[in-house]
Length: 138
Image 1 (cartoon, rainbow, N blue to C red):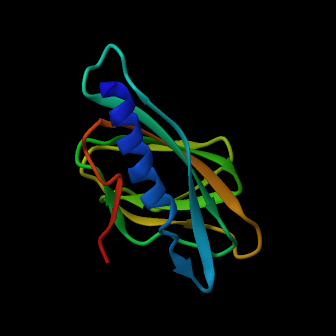
Image 2 (cartoon, rainbow, N blue to C red):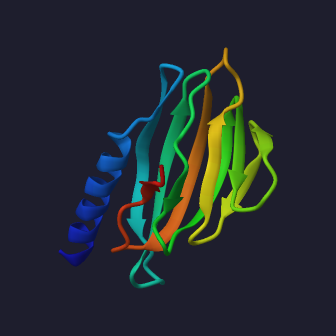
């Protein structure tokens, strides 16, 4: 029952993230929950995956993630421009990836193209009770 309750809470949090699409030049990102599971050999930790679809020209607002979250981001299609903390601004193409440490600020996350969509998979290793997963800063 405890695992079921944690998973239900996680899906509710993911649904709130999925429902908050940001706009850029009239275009939006869409966040879709794909996976959520408690990690059996790491009590109190969960593995959560979301798919982020960017319309052409779409961007996420400047944001941070749950304080405990370590994130691995993998570009599934298109090209994503990204900047985390004081790192360099880079364009990642399909098949490329980056990571975000707990507490990082993601100041740029956008589709690098104004004419083609882009998609990434974000995988979180996070304290199960740490909510929300994403918090806009501006």
